[in-house]
Length: 88
Image 1 (tube, one colour):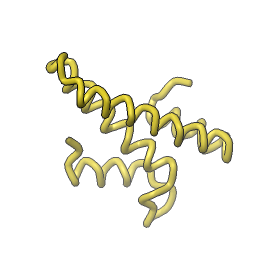
Image 2 (spheres, rainbow, N blue to C red):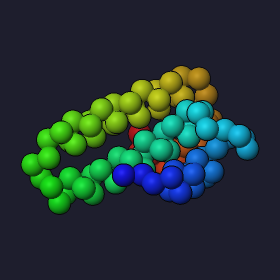
Image 3 (cartoon, helix red, strand yellow):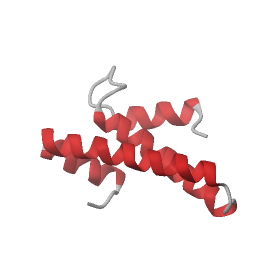
């Protein structure tokens, strides 16, 4: 689970401006962190199908945010891909 401190740190790193908490970049960064933590959990607990379903939903949600950002601003899209070390 993403603790409050970890979430604040992720928001601070991805924020576009000082009070930013809901931009696509922040949402993508938070989802990426949650996906990484859940993937680690699923490596230990192979039969946890409920968490696996949640992981798939988060991946789909992140993909939707990335597609929106790609369509609205290629520059910001490429910046967030580079910052989070995501591949196309």
